Length: 133
Image 1 (spheres, rainbow, N blue to C red):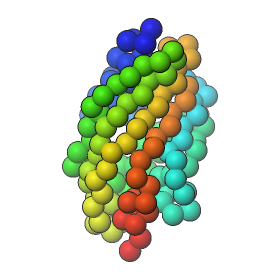
Image 2: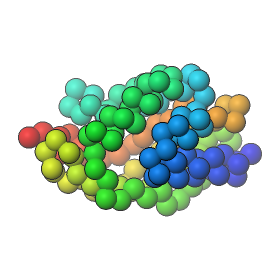
Image 3: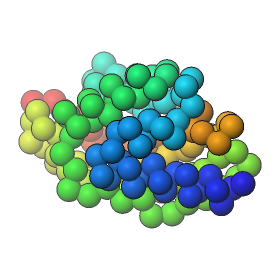
């Protein structure tokens, strides 16, 4: 099942890359627990969201806040019901025009063939500094 979960995560990244929000949402469980770790008071993207509608709002907020010049998932590792993805992104914060460029780790947990939990770990200080004008 681990290889199937890796393929499912790769499909989600491909959908995100095409701007296919419905494709991303379709791979999530109804009660998805989506958490981009960091100080929510300092950067609007950081927070915990529950349910598909909240993740859809998150994706809209990403599109409104960040302009990517690169979003690359490079390595995938599976263990039991989890997939760990390593990658990087670069771009700018739309509000300030300040650049960001860093690596990330995404952790996907599967239940019933869908992603039930997502965690993002990244250089939060870079985003907070970029968001401040």
